[in-house]
Length: 633
Ligand code: MSP
Image (tube, rainbow, N blue to C red):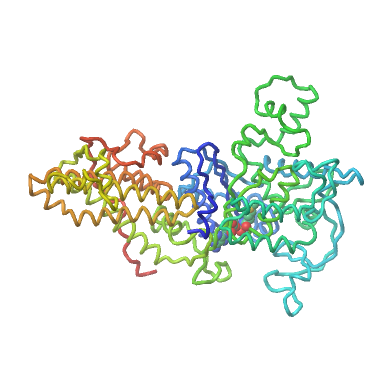
């Protein structure tokens, strides 16, 4: 569970605000690995939790296709960069399909829509002039001579030198270069004409603004970065921030990027991070790259008034100084997003560049996102890397064990925010223990016994609506529960009360875990309900009850309790195990008219007592076949 997570709710409580979630977009310089799969599944399960709650959800993910690394990989493969990235992109989309990662829109940075958006944003920042000099407030051109790391695509400073005065091997080949480029201001931006467009205050020092903003969000109990132990890390980095960000590359040495608008002069392409970060705007719901032009035309009367498009609505409301290009009516419903990213790209990309870019584009403090920073999967304590030959292929694992076994492992064997060691052995053990033995057995035993003793027909006792049954689970059972007339009545009441109470705890506790972006904790809570039900089978011994006609009611109560618990378990596991959840509903013969549809699962239906009297359960089919140890592993 996340440290201090209770203080900082990550997943929104209210149903009113739609939920916009994004991930990092992956470099297309190689096939997806287990780290990529983890992040996309994590965002998928959080998105699904919100869908389960009934929220409107927008999940954005995709690929980062430009940059030197990609250009180099394409050269190595003997392909044109576009053909190369198209091939790798297919591996990503195929994997997400296999793993049932359901996104709403796919970002691809070579897409013309995105290129247009990046260029439009560069232009806007260029056009925001400092009245004193007539120059852009945010972007300037300068020549720099220095040491350049080809691998990291950046100029290096003395800070990057090791104790021996040399640049370490992590920088790869380091060359001395003289280069003219465009820079984006991170540390000092000249005062805006009259006032800062976002804050209404004079001028803006981005670095100071960012420090104040980070502190403000923490003070409000809504940290900019969660888990919040990373806030101090980011704040320290911002304190040390010096200089500005070089956002162009001469086309003479890097062709594979988005060309700068011609107004900047010929021969520059966009730095890959400035390109990639903009994807969150390009593909945001409601974003309209032509919004500014259209509203300008509307303002100048070129387009008739009274239009009903979102852009037209916005034209009446949006302050003329805004640099943003979107139709606020829809965009504002979703923005700001929750950005799910790995710890390596917090500083400086998402924690420094991105908020300052947003600030420069006119986003207010209230419109700044939240960063959910996850840890890394390592291999035996070491980083995964092609050179070590220890890269784990999620595609192979999904084929070997099934996509849901992999989803379950990735969501259960790591605490959000922390690192974990990947282990195929633990994948198998965890699956066998939690799914094959615990949940799978519960389903199988319940349906078999219901079939054997009652031909699958459930009897719903009125006690299911009786608060006395619920009180059995409390420390101080109500008088009516205590005074139950016969021992058999009491046993029946206890069966129902235990199921009802345990299911209620599982529901409340797993919701708490989901709110803290803690799928692993949520799965533990569901596992507890499943274990309690298995224990309950042992204790109540339905096979003995079935032999005694006087105990028929008690047996019915046990079977109902088990089936109803399974119905609730299916709802609660759906974000992580959508297929298995459908499998359970199919076998319970529940909501068959919605078979295969996401809408079949709703959190508000995870309440006790929905299976009706006389409901006929289906036949048991093994849902989680045990994975036998693989001697070759
Ligand atoms: N293209 C940039 C992100 C641009 S976002 C505007 C990038 N790509 S990446 O392919 O290198 O990484 C994509 C995501 O995968 C990052 O969030 C990164 O942290 C995550 N992971 C990469 N390796 C990982 C592990 N071993 N474990 C968990 N996640 C890791 O950075």
